[in-house]
Image (cartoon, rainbow, N blue to C red; front, side, top):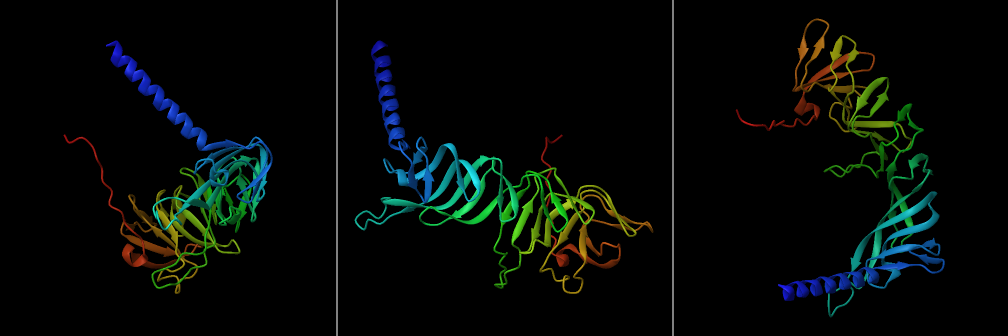
Length: 301
């Protein structure tokens, strides 16, 4: 009916008008250069606001020209915000916000703490309460990064670390973690690896490997390991004190094979030095290797 259609059109118009009002209240364009959140912003900067009509509550900023923030030629800034409730009469009402983390994107390559970061991807910093960038947290690596004779492919993710804390309170020496993208290969001591993460200490020496697998078959001494064999270096493994230079190889779907014809099946791991010396065999539980159950889901026949 005509009356119902008119009523629906009026309702839609009112909804669109209210939505436009809300969007306008939560956005702003700077008419002049302004300092917000500890950052000098040029005129023409577009802001998305967390709180209505409050530019200092911005959660995103889009700059008309690059703004240099901690060495990053930034075009887009995103802030993760923490709400503040300071009204005792209404403890659930948000009275303000402050940033806890910053995400920058821009142009070119940014040199940060000795790493080459791709500025077209997110570069993360912790944030001071007033919005100024604090500790560097991570980025997507650009081409040209190297640590402990290991070259990293562009696109690998870098994360800063204060060290892993264990249940007994011990904090290890990990300072940096690099995680290659799926399908990327990294050569470590001449061994092609993929997946997982590589940990480095403060001096950028290799500190650990976790979740990495052989990207191709490996002949090490008398042992032949197929591609997909798990490879790990664990700073706190029980075997590390006795064998500080050992690498742990853990067969998965396909067994490792010895020149004598012996096979090493899934469930048992082998400690070897990189010159091929066999040191010890351990069941995966004793070696600290976590085995996951694989489920195949398909149509029942």
